[in-house]
Image (cartoon, rainbow, N blue to C red; front, side, top):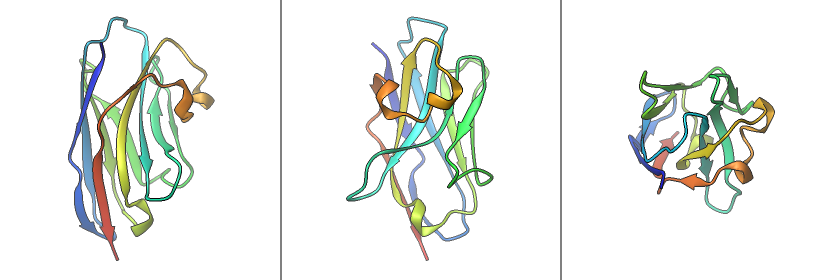
Amino acid sequence: QVQLVESGGGSVQSGGSLRLSCAASGYTSNTYYVGWFRQAPGKEREGVAAIASDGRKNYAPSVRGRFTISQDNGKNTLYLQMDSLKPEDTAMYYCAAGIGQVWVWKLLLRSIYGYWGQGTQVTVSS
């Protein structure tokens, strides 16, 4: 059973930075994809950034150029470096994983992910 545990959320002023981490365990395959999603109050959960099993990445237009997704060498920890944060980035951020290979353009679709973390809150004040 894949388990995902997020950390690193918090409160920051507009223009600040945060780095989220997601510790993963229980993978039964070397072919998997991982991503970060977020959900603001009253809104749908949306894809923010994701990495395919071959290392290709996809970013939501709203965060491209400000956020960077990465993994450690052992691929046991997923990171999301968030710079130039804006109040509209305020949300609960979730780490997600799925087994197999998918097209890069699908990586930000919530429906393809079978494993989710509990989430970590990010609050950006103006």
